[in-house]
Length: 423
Image (cartoon, rainbow, N blue to C red; front, side, top):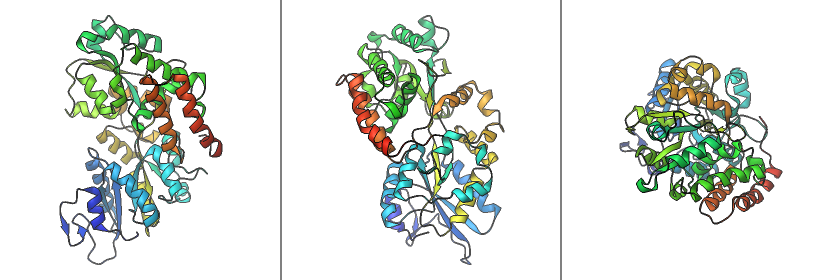
């Protein structure tokens, strides 16, 4: 690994409370100097303990390599990748949000490890969508997907029942009808809550509607793509969804739902863990369902990947740890603890955790309809065009048709030069 300024790392993470000399106290060096030290940077918070457990098990399984996991806030970690692509100050292994990986691959942050992973012989067990997010424009792998998640519909069944509905909606028409029936302006209760903020979270929550209507990222100027945005804009125009959604992150949308101010919301897999851990309390009966469909069911894939960083002197050892971390057994154990979905189909089959719980069962089914964001080296630019269009239509600044046409003017030339690789 290239030399890292531990002072800089401490400044980046803001979490190095105890430092010995110029090195973080949690870095352990073997006294004989033969142990190869591998650093893993991640932005997991609630899941950090599970990741450290996997590293500890790996360290105990052999005596040649010691893996140390270090938390770095997501924003600072992404900044460090950009800086490190030039300076060479990178960890041995780094975590990244799945749609961003192609961009960092193009910057030279991650090593090509396709040959090593092909020799492993277990790639066929990974779901195509998550695995594709680790590929470059030529289809070569630079890492492995660690976990998956997707979006589904979460309903306050007390509100729906009071309005005369026993089940969640399955179509856009039913969804619109229930939104109207459950909206109560006197109590500031809306039919639906979602995140439409001007960042990647907004794009993430918009994509299921885009694809359900028959639109796509590759054809934002189509009538179908405009219809998706027009439908959501209508909810705001008619007071069925708060105008504040343009300022809401996914946590804000959840807060509104938990407070009883929305009958339905677009919810992620990770929210279940928040409910079960008591981080968020729902004082009412709730139920998950597939997101309602227009032309077809649709959702979107989220999750994190781990890649081997450019410049490491321990490429082979890093690949070995990734393969260890992503065995079917370890993937199943980790995702059960973290409340996420496995990226391997054989891991999904090892436990009944994702089928016995009706809530996770919905998300497992939703994965059949979930699309990846990209992968594309210019995804940040593509995403910005999408969430900018969404915001302008929801705020009433542009028609859905004009907003999507402008987004298409940005995205189409990018995809003409470098198309999104087909799976």
